[in-house]
Figure 1 (tube, rainbow, N blue to C red):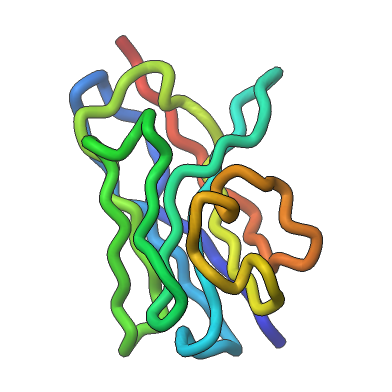
Figure 2: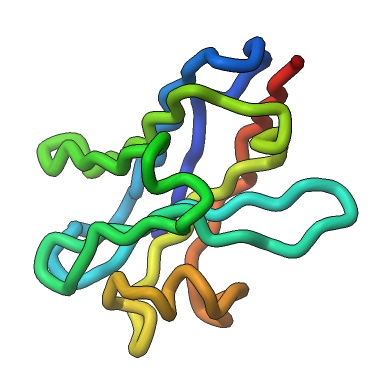
Length: 132
């Protein structure tokens, strides 16, 4: 069974950092794209970053490209999102999604912009709270 499991959220003060983890179970990274998006109460989903071993990326939203970094550990089938210099406006539930099917099996600006992806495998999310 294919699953995506996020972890690593928490509460930090502005300027702090967190490392979010996304374990992708039941798939290999060869032909998929994996990325992160977030959603705060009352706001639209916002694509943060995506990556693919063989199909493009990494890509970042303009709002986070100088502060967030996406990383992979292929041996562990895990994708990380390093959050640095966090701001109160980064407070949201952060979700990881794995995409097997076109066109979102490629990391691109469309992966970030066209949310939700109808056939993506998504986790339950991990909450990030940033206090001022």
